[in-house]
Length: 290
Length: 280
Image 1 (cartoon, rainbow over the protein chains, first blue to last red):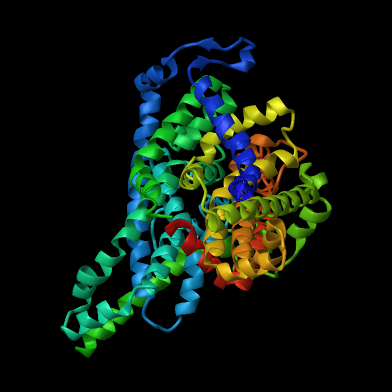
Image 2 (cartoon, chains in turn cyan, blue):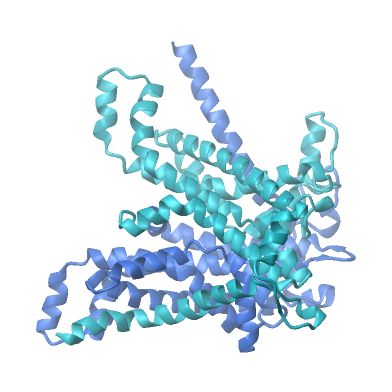
């Protein structure tokens, strides 16, 4: 009998080794570092700051700007992504002509590297020969340099986020809708409900838990956006207007080598993630999402 | 009534076509650019009826190092080896863990599931600092080993999740019959249960491969020359003296091939993965 008790732990051992050494241990190390000032390029040993890094971040207007910009980007892009994804999922439930084509097309950005996606948009928006310039001239609009204009930077990041991530929302809600029990809707039709009533009173309430789940995931993943933005501008953007949290973190770490400070930023991002994911984590802990 | 209906159909299709164009135009534009001669790329207004050429691909594959000092072959093999290594390691480790979680009741089982799912929420962009410190202290920066272990850790939670649901679905009788025949636990796991969860392995494997194949952030920090992968090559065509748009779009286009092939051939299994993954 004793063997039966030991076996599952043995099978979990490789997983525990990898997650322990590549996730838990380094994260604990970063937590420790976040209480120090350490810049290896200056050759000095780490000096203990206590909560210094965190206090400094909260008083730093640049960092607060970064947070504000990130929150705005996440709020707008996630809202649009959710609404469009839901609408596409509902429309494609009907057996309309061209359904397979649209379904495939709408999913494509999911399998594209965000870095390549960023470059695609960079080519599209090229000031001299980009297709977007041509499109503007055909529709009679003035030529504008979107990539070089700091005022447009955040808008471009939002468009790119929408382009990259609407497929995920679409996919989950689309498959979710397809597995809905049909009886409820049928009952609604029999009672003479209009289409908008059926959606509002039947489809949406059933879909709501799934929508909340996708929403949480979208916010978490959008908070950490970095590679697509880096590929779009290969810098923090014109006038640093593209400095969202991920970009700023990378900058502090890899450009300025502020290891203590960037570890503290990593933990701010982690905190934002867990605050957003709190309902989800509680669900997992209760075993409801297993 | 019929008029209202027709307007609605028209509006719905208009919206669908608009969204399809929004999604597809950037991709098609890159593929077209990769097939243009270098002068044609810079033409304005853009040319749509051009004679396609493989010039950019030839430059990339055969004289990339002369033009830009970038060796496509090296990046390509790194990408292939890293993505395959990650896939194999992830599936193997995840299957072992999923076997334990899906077939046994043991003390701490729930805690283990919770910890695994929580690690799935950790942001990789923030993990680059601790990962960099870890890999540099081990002296394995800029090696495929560093990338494979990092990607495996990144992909394990989802893979465990997928495979656990597959293991849990298997009838207990199959296992009991094998036990009576005298098969040991390891043998039951490998020869009997593993073949039964093949669809789960395909799903977990493909999603792992795509993540490893597409990642930029982690490779950007953990490698610089020897182990650098294709997403880094794409970005490095932006140089101080200008951007090599032809080879860049050719690389971008080639990078789309493996994921598209997988999705076309295994779309049914993938739908499974993405539904199981985030929802359950």
